[in-house]
Length: 257
Image (cartoon, rainbow, N blue to C red):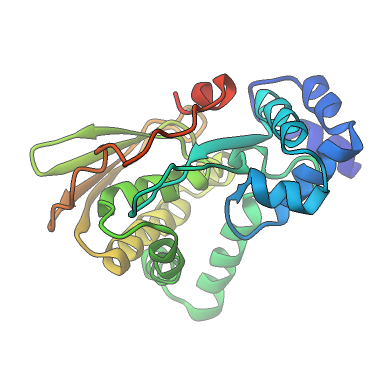
């Protein structure tokens, strides 16, 4: 099977292939998409303007098209100091494996290979991976951000579509999608065990929260539930930041629901 056909078959639901192909057909827009894809973290309009040497309004228009096509996500910068939050852009995790991006299975394959090499069980391997990821996750998060929110955003970046529900002792995250559905269906103990371990490692590394349970569901339908217990309540993560934030584009608002 050719790479092009394989990419088309792995396209996420949402805007059609034709819409995404048209969005990437513009050379300047494709450069912006590739820059966001290769960036180690979210990028701003100013950074993209400097890279492309285009007018910032032109960059914003290109970004709006990429967001409407479901290729890129926009979110408000989280700040721990006064100032107007910027809009930051990142690759839509559901695009992984298409349009020249790395597929989600590469990461899980590395962890499965480590299980074979070390002989360790899935949760142990996953916990090591979660601890490693927690360092980078803490560095990205503003000071004082609630630990459960950091874990939720990490799951969002991984393509799980988490939705939050507060409980008496913490939070329950309903995972609306499994980015590893086919392999999770074939080997649920390994794949779900790895992700339970990753969640435990993240919680341990970040601090202030611990994982209580992971209730499995059909990976093709989503619906797994990750229960978190808050051990060190943080400040209200929904508290308004000083300064008026930039308005999210309509496409970005839709991506958050």
